[in-house]
Image (cartoon, rainbow, N blue to C red; front, side, top):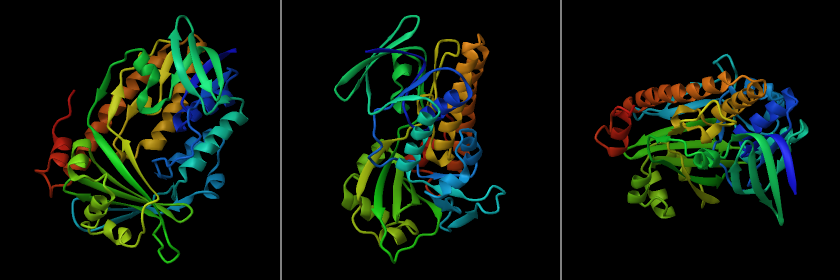
Length: 366
């Protein structure tokens, strides 16, 4: 089978679905989306600030719809720069509470909304071949079927793999080797967590704790790949032993049973140099990845997905300036992020001679 579409989106995470919904809802272009996963595994990215609600409203998803499923987030607590846990409430921000997400349900909701507005979704489907002449020609495999897709324009939302970014041999600037090791746990009936995220620094990195819907909690240790290996934290016993040395995270860890799952994620900062005048663009992690301390994750993905869709609309109207402006913005935004990140890490002075902290306060490469 060979099928034709105006726009093909590779990747059905928040960036890809935001692009699909925007194009299907606000333009007459035909849109297809290819996603390899069924979202049946644990997924990182648990908490979002209230600034996400206007973006989702633009996509046709209202706050009340989300609050029926996900857990409210009322603030952040951080022992960063001192042993004291400082709490910052969201309720007095003027935007109300954020959310602790069930990521599988959140991503499924975005997929359903894309379908509702007319996006043709192939899932689970794997891209097996990519060719580019005037148009894009891709082969995908879904179940036992092999399908050929022809598209006039492609949006690369394939995450850190960046399938089109690699295919087009774009230069990618990688800033660090940050990783996150997550433990996912169930809470017992007696253990009630405040509806807030908790951050706590250590000599070799920092911890992140987020309550989840359905009496779950995620606890992550953020560090560099070489440090994670040296500390042997992929070993559950070493993971627990190191976590129990903290002053605040240990309070929760001590009350938990064995983790339901351990997951290792590469979360290094990087940015792709995307041409803005060709018949493709990248969004989400395929365009730029950020340290989770920046809190740019899901919100950035959705925002970049929406704006990549606007680039596509302008491209089909004969205007390539929007693509060039988008590409410049991605680079400028990444530079601003690096300066902001440096300020965050410089505020922790207790382990200034530790390799993890030193690596983040030296001048980043230009």
